Image 1 (cartoon, rainbow, N blue to C red):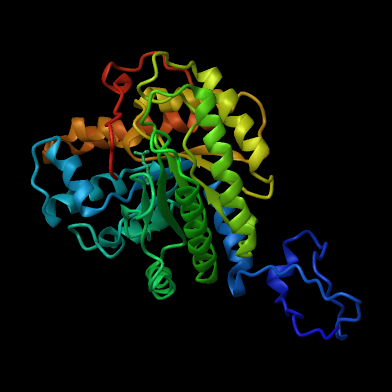
Image 2: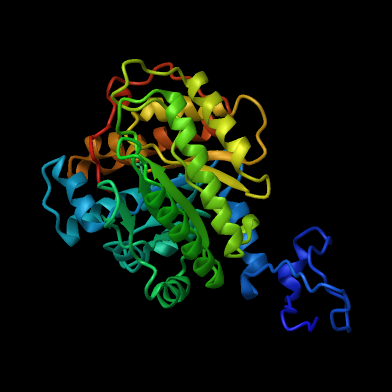
Length: 393
Ligand code: 13P
């Protein structure tokens, strides 16, 4: 058999698999094996860098601050404190968050919306530089949002693959080093086999394109909290979704050492009659992850999905009571921002207090990443759930 499929790997791509080359490659010789089965590992010239970026985001006691709300969703956040959705107000809010002194002690990455990636503080300092000064890796939301999925049971699919390679290359030039693509799966709507396959395939294509352009992809099939189903049903759907996601990630030659996951925790549906304890949520979630996620993946960065700030932190803490094969941490938006917004109220004189509120939440989640958090002394506001039925991000 001719060796037409012989693939040349660069040294970077082969070096980080621990010296054990997983492909049939002999120096200076053409393939002499009877069958030319080659296990291809691609991530172009960025392989080493992707692994390093993922590792630095998945570093002990740190997690991700997600502030990648689209302009429309950021408008909802601002409206909750009576502010108009103007560029100036969005900039003021993001400036408050991204210039919080000491944030890098607890936060390793920040996911930005495109507008923020190219924005500066009112003093003219790029937000990207504000992050770098705190040793926080800048990230970028690259998906183009959800639209109805024809032929499904009222489900949706995530747009954004067209032009993604060139956009990603531009984001890299601007300083982004990781990316996020959020698609959703709805349990009450099925989920249909079509919706799950579309979600998994889209995530895998996005992940391959991101890696090819130097961005560590965060893989996020959010299984929505909506529904009155028990926790066992969530476990079943989560296992189904993640098995398809990994199937297509592998099929697209995505380098597992250079990705991060952003799963939902395995909980009962938000309208289920009983709430689950953090220990139960941790048990189900870790069972699911251990069954589906290879240890090559460096980090699991949970979304908060409408849980209260304290709930999200307690659940993360419960998951870190014994060692895990991966760094288990947070990538919260609502569960890091809620107290901040309430404290700020859009008033310049409240900026310092709001930054302190952010540090309190960031530190709480940092402790939870280390399994050392206690909810003692947490205020009533931080315990209020934020679930919104049919929430769009
Ligand atoms: P939440 O933590 O609010 O669920 O945010 C999800 C998300 O994808 C933000 O990037």
